[in-house]
Structure formats: structure tokens, C-alpha cells
Length: 474
Ligand code: CTP
Image (tube, rainbow, N blue to C red; front, side, top):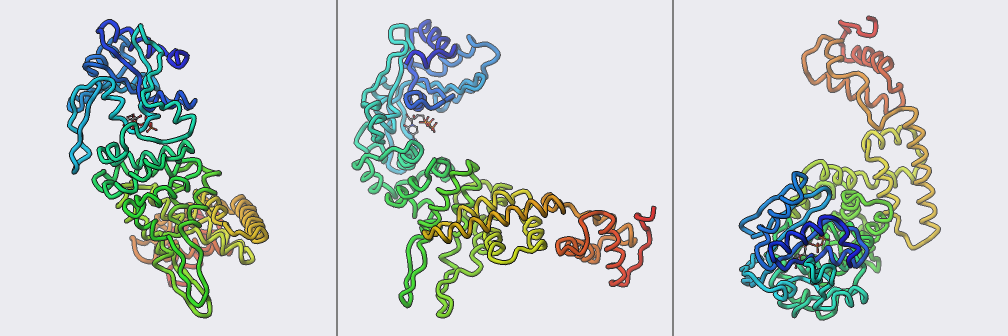
């Protein structure tokens, strides 16, 4: 373990701890991660005594490069030092009430501190004093559980999860992130305590959900969320995708498993959390738009439109940001069928220009989503769709090179229209602007100022308007 502690931050903590005669350990996630050869810059230090005093002295020793924040109410302090974040806390014993995640905290021994932790793999520590520098303390065989790839609580899981129900989400998150299994007794306790997740704040839950979505194979996490009973509580809209209905012997596909397949497939191509969210929500409105029509079979007409309208309330419920990330997800959900429709028809230039104009800078992400959405079990069909998408991609490139629609700005601005016809802001300005846009998308005129200006003059005439200031003539 010593080799991992080569950074000067550890020798400084060790020196200061020794001079203050404090038993001090690195504990938790950092120890787990170095054991797994994962790179971590978040260090948790636990000390038998006052964590804040130790932090202040360590910061003094490091000098002006160290920024300290003290959280007196929690008895903790955090030092930021270059790319490192080091959190200091006194060893604790915690007890919980049934209606709250907030523990009653008392000073404890290092053994108390190990036992209050969530999982055996997170309850390992490394000594930082002179007599034990670099020595691993592993009271619950966390190393063995890492070897066996098992998530397990140090105490009876009923106690660990009931104390802090967020840990049920953490168990599933670690299982998905690390490709570990959850110990069966532990999983049984999650099932039993699932309802208690309701006392945890939405912000903490979604932090774990996002980590599950960012895992290498996110469906592993979602299947566990579903099997544990947590999913319908934390994300009912997604849980509703489950199931197949059969009418006249015809069933539709199970949109829950289809969506998870799309999510896994897109995760091979992107680590963009919001593109993964778009994959997760692309069919979210299927349950409420679903209809069986005797001549057509199962239909989901308008699910892309209704789905994009659902994004905001889902983001609000889940405490996700209601900002441009949400707008991006709305847009991708709304447009997710467009390239499919295109690939089924003869691809005209104007249809491609319209798609570029609507998707703008997100066109590549939209294509990635559509390609991930091809989950047919029939290899011939998959081949056919993917090669058509390839055609759409080529066509997009070709049209973009020619017409520059992707970052489209109207070639003649509203101000220029008003100046030309001597207008104050009015409905006609919008009508002319839209007519110019349509003419460009339809390929009637080129996407440049001269063509658009001439079009504006001619179109103005059809509205009975004469040009007053001819900028083109100037
Ligand atoms: N911990 C816990 N119960 C929690 C949260 C954290 O017992 N609900 C303990 C674990 O020992 C954990 C340590 O506090 O290792 C640090 O927690 P945190 O920084 O939130 O998570 P990490 O385990 O470091 O994992 P990650 O950085 O991936 O979130």
C-alpha cells in the first residue's frame, strides 16, 4: 500500500498527525479505489480526535496552496490542494432514528467508525502514523469481497440500510459501476427496506441514479433497481414502460427492456450523461400513447411529441436541472423518429435541410441515438436500417457542406427586413422571415444574403409592400 501513499499530501498529514499525537487513517472510497487500481483524488481521513484541528494544521503546513473549508456543524473540514480533495473527520459512532437519515453522532473508536460504514469494501483503512504507515486495516474482509466481486454490508444489512436508506441505491450503483454482485442476504434487505428510500432527498437519489446511468452497462443497475422494488418508487414513469399487452393474439415489445437495450447500446458510444438520458426517455410516452387498431396493430402515434413534453416534469420530479441540458433531452426525444422516417423514404435534400435546421448542433447525437434504437433481433433488418442511417449521415454531410444549415442564422435579419420596407416590428416581419427560411429549406434559393434579399423583395411585393431602402443596391 505504501506506493500509493507516495504523494507529499500523505507525508504531511502523517507528520502533523504524529506531532499532534493523533491516530490517523485514510479510509473508505480512496482505499477501495487504489485496491481496484482506480484513480481517485478524493481522500477521506479519519482521526481519533478532532478532525478540524488536524485539517487546520495540515493546511498551515502545506501553505497558501491549500484551501480549507470548515463545517463546524458536521465536525468536518475539507482541504483542496491542487487536484486533491481531502476530507477530515473524527472517528464516529452513529445512531439513527427511524424517520430520518440524520444520525445522532458521538465520538467513537476506529472500530466504531469501520462498523458504521456502508459496505465491507468501503470499510478498509490505511494507517498514517509512524508505527503503521501504509498498513492496511481490513476488519470485514473487504479485500476478499473485492476478489469475489461482492457488495456486502459490514453489519446486519437490515441495520445498515435502515440507518441510511441511500445505501440501497449505493449498493446498486457500486454493483453497476464495478460489475459486482450484491450479496443475496443484503439484496433481500434492500427489497424489504425499499420503501424507506422515501426519506432520502431527491438530490441524493438522482446523484446515484446518474452514476448508474454512467456505468459501463447501465441496464445491470436498472434491472437491480427494478428487482429490488426501488424503481417504481424513485422513477415510476420509467417503471411504467414494463410489460406487454396482448390483443387479438398480438403483443407489442416490452418497452422497458427495449429502452435498456438502447441505453446499453448508446453507452458503448458516449459518456455524455444527457445523451444517455435521452436514450432512457426516448420512448417514455409509449404507455400513454399506446392504442391497438385492428388494421394497424399496436400504435404509439405521437409518442415522441408527448414524450418530449414529459421530460420537464420528469426532470422536476427527479431534481435534475431545468436548464439547457433538459432542453437538449427534450429536443432529442422529440426528433428521435425523424432520421428513421427519412431512412425509410427517398432522402430528399429538403428533408435533410429540415432535419439539420431542427437538430442543429445536436445532429450527430441524434444520429447516435437513432442507431442505438435499432434493437431488432433480425440481423437482416439491423443491417438494412444501419446502412440506411449511413446513407442519411452521408447525405447530411453533403448538404451541410453545401448549404451550411447546421448553425443556421437567417441570412437576412429582422432588422434588415424592417429597414428595407420601413416597418416597425409587426407580424409581416415574421411572415417574411419564415418565408425566406422555407425557401432555403425547400432549395428554392441558396442560403446566402444576396439570394435571400432578392427573395425578400419579391415576396414583399406579394404582400403589397414596396422596398424603401435597398441595402443590396447600396
Ligand atoms: N459512506 C457510508 N454511507 C454513505 C455514504 C458514504 O458509509 N451513505 C462512507 C463509505 O465508507 C464511503 C465513504 O463514506 O467509502 C466516502 O463516501 P463518498 O465519498 O460519498 O463515496 P465513495 O465511497 O468515496 O465513492 P464515490 O467517490 O464513487 O462516490
